[in-house]
Amino acid sequence: MASACDFLVIGSGIAGLSFALRAAEHGSVVVVTKKGTAESATNYAQGGIAAVLAPGDSFEEHVRDTLVAGAGLCDEAAVRFVVEQGPDAANGLIDLGVRFDRSEAAPGYDLGREGGHSQRRVLHAADFTGREIERVLVERCEAHPDITLLSNRISVDLVTTTKLGLPGPPRVCGAYVLDPETGAVESFRARIVLLATGGCGKTYLYTSNPDIASGDGIAMAFRAGATIANMEFIQFHPTCLYHPDARSFLISEAVRGEGAVLRNRSGEAFMRRYDPRADLAPRDVVARSIDFELKRSGDDCVYLDCTALDPAFARARFPNIYERCLRYGFDLTKQPLPVVPAAHYCCGGVRTDLHGESDLENLFAAGEVACTGLHGANRLASNSLLEGVVFARAAAQAAAHRLAAGIEAPPQFPDWDPGRAVDPTETVLVNANWDEIRRLMWNYVGIVRSDKRLDRARRRIVNLAREIREYYWNVVVTPDLVELRNLVTVAELIVRSASLRHESRGLHYTVDFPQTDPEPRDTLLKAPLPPL
Ligand SMILES: Cc1cc2nc3c(=O)[nH]c(=O)nc-3n(C[C@H](O)[C@H](O)[C@H](O)COP(=O)(O)OP(=O)(O)OC[C@H]3O[C@@H](n4cnc5c(N)ncnc54)[C@H](O)[C@@H]3O)c2cc1C
Image (cartoon, rainbow, N blue to C red; front, side, top):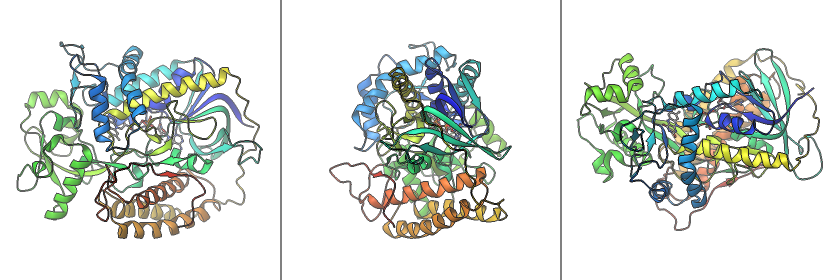
């Protein structure tokens, strides 16, 4: 038998929990989340959340900065919507209890500056802003009588009327969710489903993302029939600590915002050679410049020199980064930090409108899983937490209207059918496939691309996808297998999207098409795709 609720939320980061709190005013909410309740990219966000709050700042400037970063591909309506909702969204978090760093000066908060922003407009809680936001949202959701939070539950697939063989336009009516402890796949029926599963950094060998970021929501939405947009635009964060044990620990862009400088091994502050904005150039420019610099020199890393910052200020402003670097043997107030780029953020995802709704009825998406049009071809720093809150709230409002208008109850659907699946005996296959995908994405579909590399990636991905599909239906479903199946789907979507874009724009840079076309266009993919 299926559990039933009005709103099923998949994911418990800033988007999922913000939606849950709003939606719970209108109906019953179940949140399923893959690991611990707080385990999310949100929890690791350092820099902060952008909003126009300073007296000298304006919506126009935030809009302009976002459009410039987005390299002609932003949907201006989405940009204006997010920017204009910014102060209200930020104040909403403050009202819930989020404690951002205060300042004596107007507007009463210490606003940070980050690359690509023409003004100081980033609210932060030291350098663990995400943890503070997540703490408050989890507390609020846990205390809410109409929200059920189920941790350690991994959503396997969305259930649609099409899959059930029902007539009429396709609509989503729930999801199958695996409880890894019992091995049972539970059915959840819902009038509305919100995907808030975050990004897909784990598609790449090196990433700043936590392990949950395997692109599950994008893959589930794609299989269910929703349109997926602009997957070629993967943002690489320029500065992750280069250390074998650091697992790509991220050094926030805010550090450069406060005056840190990138240097090569000979001590040259090389960014000036690549861009007049030097260390404050947008992320893609900085990541690509580092990539060029490393390829040119053959070095393994470049260095982020923070020694010009006042040591007391650096320790107080970046306590998390300071402590973590110290743990790996680097005192950032005294010596430059070795850094490399790593996959950080997915600008593409499930295509949604200004209400956070996909083109599949009753399916909403918010946060990094969605492609709202805000980021275009490149994300401006600290815009993503903001986007998560703004679209979660918009989606909750639209979903509540839908409920009030008397949306049809979801049909009953059959329990999960394990078919002829047997217990997996070859876990080594899963690990090997996982490793191969991440390595080939890093080597062939990374910061700088070419037709030859994309072609090679495409041929390998096709074989891997076939192998994984065959294996998937023959063994009992496990979290690793669910993620692997999603990872290969997302990898294919990225490779296909990159191959379709015959220009360089924003985060997509290919040596075969260095020009930017005069007419911007989105890359849209929808199942079934033509054979490769
Ligand atoms: C290190 C780091 C620093 C960052 N710093 C900033 C910053 O300063 N400012 C900024 O704006 N952005 C920042 N970002 C980006 C930003 O944090 C994310 O884009 C944002 O938090 C995404 O929020 P979300 O709610 O969409 O997803 P997440 O916060 O990633 O949450 C996704 C949730 O979905 C769950 N989930 C995933 N798959 C499944 C499944 N199959 N079944 C059930 N649950 C599932 C996960 O467990 C998790 O709970 C940073 C990102 C990283 C990694």
